[in-house]
Image (cartoon, rainbow, N blue to C red; front, side):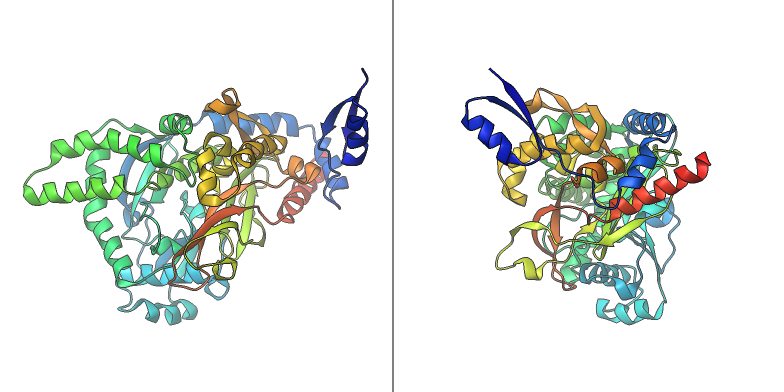
Amino acid sequence: MVDVVSVGTDVLADAVAEQAAGVERVDWRPPVPGTEDDLATVALDPLRPGANEQALAAMLAVQARLVDVRPAGEVLGLEPGRFLHAGPPIAWEQASGPLRGALMGAAALEGLVEDPEDAAERFARGDFTLEPCHHHASVGPMAGVVSPSMWMWVLEDPASGRRTHCTLNEGLGKVLRYGAYSPEVIERLRWMNDVLGPWLRVGVTQSEPVDVTGILTQMLQMGDEAHNRNRAGTLMLLRDLMPAMIRAEGDQSDQADLAEVVRFVGANDHFFLNLAMPACKLALDAARDIEGSTMVVAMARNGTEFGIQTAGTGEEWFTGPAQVADGLFLGDYGPEDANPDIGDSAITETAGLGGFAMATAPAIVRLVGGTVPDALATTRRMREITLGENPRWSIPVLDFDGTPSGIDVARVCRTGILPQINTGMAGAVAGVGQVGAGLVTPPAEIFPAALAALAARTRARVR
């Protein structure tokens, strides 16, 4: 029996298979056009192998622990009129509908305007400042808006003392992070500031630090992928925090508040997402500023642009137009109602979760579309563009292999395979809220742009 290896087109492979010969099909594609010289330069960089090994090891070594919950004004020094947002930097003039809606609602929450609609003119006038969450050791889902009074999780790596932060999750539907700002949205946020945040702080500060990395390890073996499915993670978090909260409860009003806190968290399957995200950022930030490394350390979207950062290019963003996700829609909504991709939550995929771990959460296809075989194939395909795997985050159905981790710009350009992200979809018009969920990839051009910058640094260094 003759075995044949077929590379590229299936015509030859099909012909051989029809003659009962063994065929090994290799899914080879030519490099992204225009990247050949930069790929050759980076491939010959003597620093690259060691730098990528260092970056991946640094990311995998981080242990994220939940150590506090406090208002953003305290932990980040945010002052009235300063707002953080998801994705790379953006001005009000370029901001999408959901980002504008979230900013307007946050301005009303802070008492800077009486009516959220009145905030638009003040943002346009430059009365308020906008800065990316990523520039403040933070991440935010969807619009990712952070204002001073919002309570934030505080995660810490005990080995280095570095910290990252994220706001509390509001739930799904008409919520601020999807751009909604109706009175009930603002009322819920005020309850979160007045009741939810303080109660969570009791649970966090009067317990041993919660091992968020450990919960991620467990939840991946329980059907979560830590981006759009966080059900097991949320319940494990409640398990860890509730004893201290119950011990601290006082009069009947406290008891009623605590009951509402437990109900709110337990009914919100996405609640743990806002801990998974800063845990991933904490890990990836450990890999920053490693000369010669081609590993991606951030993927983020502001609803207008999609940006990435790499370990070897510092704080520079490489951006392109954000894409509209392909997926399932709520009610009568359709693709024409959806805003392009938005949010810092792609930090989960950057670390090897979310779309990269879909094989461990096949039920996710009921939310984002596709089939169970698609989910398995996606995780396998992501191995083609990553530097290694995370042994902590194993996938039972793939014989407990670790999730693909450490996106490599060079491998993306060499294969043409783009990172797979599963995501929620916000309505394009400010105030609408969520319209669906689906699958999306970054704009292809941002990886060659990052590769060109890495190649330029290599050429300057080896001259």
